[in-house]
Length: 135
Ligand SMILES: CC(C)(COP(=O)(O)OP(=O)(O)OC[C@H]1O[C@@H](n2cnc3c(N)ncnc32)[C@H](O)[C@@H]1OP(=O)(O)O)[C@@H](O)C(=O)NCCC(=O)NCCS
Image (cartoon, rainbow, N blue to C red; front, side, top):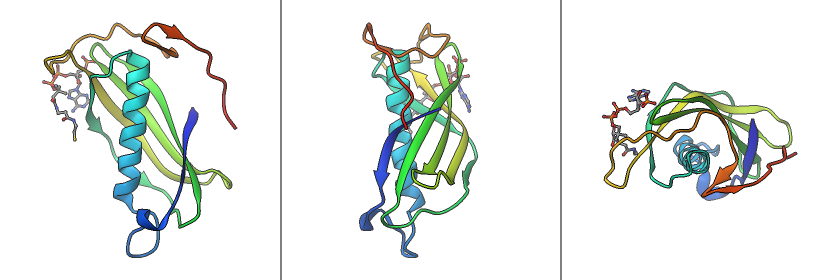
């Protein structure tokens, strides 16, 4: 799993108890996952269809640096299923895990359309590139 995005937890990201607000984290994850799906499927018209059980394993606090990891686990006909893990960048302690996020590939009219992809690639709009694992 690649952890592409890092976030620095700031005061506006907190809940009234002083830890990272779950809704804020879910917004970050949804955006991270849709970008991953767009790149994998080579189509900017993809939508969130289904998110499985969300396990908030541990909390993050102001000043923490966290990183968001997404990995494709199943290429369907029109869908892409991913899993997600969020962890503390420094301690590597898991903050959240989601087993399944399903996104659907759409045509310009908003109808599901086969994407034709079967495995993880790092090509977008025909541009192939190597992606090295980041620290
Ligand atoms: C996405 C949408 C067009 C799909 O329509 P639909 O009638 O469910 O389409 P289908 O039944 O053909 O399913 C499409 C794919 O989603 C999968 N799917 C549907 N319901 C699912 C569910 N509950 N869990 C997992 N996958 C599901 C199907 O298996 C299919 O995948 P496949 O083609 O790879 O086999 C429609 O549900 C929609 O517009 N939803 C709102 C999306 C949205 O606004 N998201 C943002 C939310 S804030």
